[in-house]
Length: 278
Image (spheres, rainbow, N blue to C red):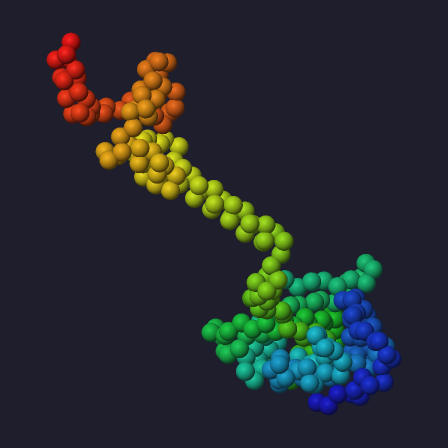
């Protein structure tokens, strides 16, 4: 079926087509059903069920992200009222509930949402193509002499568009965050670094520390380890430790505890020699 109108090259500059549901019924579908001219000749007559949805944009007269068509509907069965929605590679499946379209208080039409499935039911694969089908209430059916015809409606109006892929949007968002991290992300990373540094300090300086732990910290307490070694005994330091503990009756420094040190043999030898002269 060839489009009745020409391409939209004669449309005024900056023309945008964003009609409401009521406008599509009153000013376009009603005029098409009664053979009256439409306000703008931008909706072609195409039997959309003879094509797959990705083939329809090139059949349209106007549109970039959504496309409008006048199309007939055929019966699925000779004596039934169900429409045949099968295409070349798949089928359109109704979803949700029908929406009533009103003009004032008058019920003038019905809007039905459909999703395209690739393959054959019941094993079809759901696609991103969506269709909104508008039909008139009380639209004229085929006459009695065509009662055996497969034609169900002369005209319905269809709006076709492809739903945006949310997964791709999320991937793009993650890529943007990796390339251009936000201030909140930077602050979070800085806080993590601070927390890690604090944890390292807590590990390096335990709360309950003993002399054994202090001796293991060679980088900080090397002089103490040297003073307490056998090779370099310092009686003055020994006196200071014992005095700090005994005079006050308790340990002044929590890291210092009384130590038992052996008296060198030279001390006894000197004492023996001295006693001979007393």
